[in-house]
Image 1 (cartoon, rainbow, N blue to C red):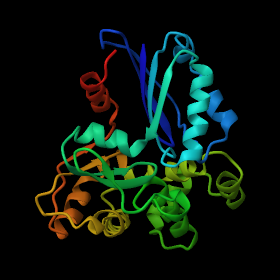
Image 2 (image 1 turned 45 degrees about the horizontal axis):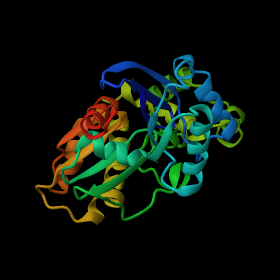
Image 3 (image 1 turned 90 degrees about the vertical axis):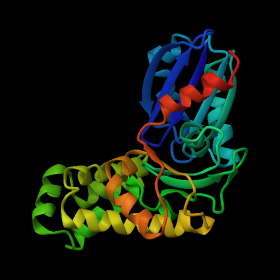
Length: 284
């Protein structure tokens, strides 16, 4: 049995395939970002999923691609946890950017970007990822991500920059007590996931001028920081992964067009495409 997982900060999608490369089942756990979630919590989020624990001794390989797995220390933490649980498995842990590449373009050269809870980008030359700037996470970077827009909404609400009608709806949707917000950001696990939860509000109001404006500004910042430095040809293939890109595709296309670029495709959830890639490229 082989497990393939695409692990974001908010959720992790798992698929199990058998020796004939047929899908046995798929499950979803809470996010498994080792850069922001404590080891004990990471462990608990896995062992509390009974479908995974039921096959823990039957798994021969795990291919895990995750947010927060772009540097050695958090990667080693998650790898050790997986090896502790799945005692007979060879464990391969890579960053989520590589999963995005495999899901989007396979082995063809392309610019690949993530716009989900967090954000990132790379240029894939057909063999290796080229990343001009490492991702420093939700506090310092993550332009145009869910947590980026979540922070923007909260700040605009408290500074009274949000239109009154939208602010009223925002109040009904969320607990905006200052102490509650500070506790979730500074004392609870997954503050990036908490901030990103506010971004879902934008989906219901995406036709409002205020929402359109902040989305456009966020996308422009992402392109300036994460796409334009690669000096792409106007014919370059560009893929986006994640719900933010999916739900605001129209604005994304317009922003790309202003830079004489064109979006090739947007994939909301990469797990199915990632599965197809592995079926073609691994021996079971």
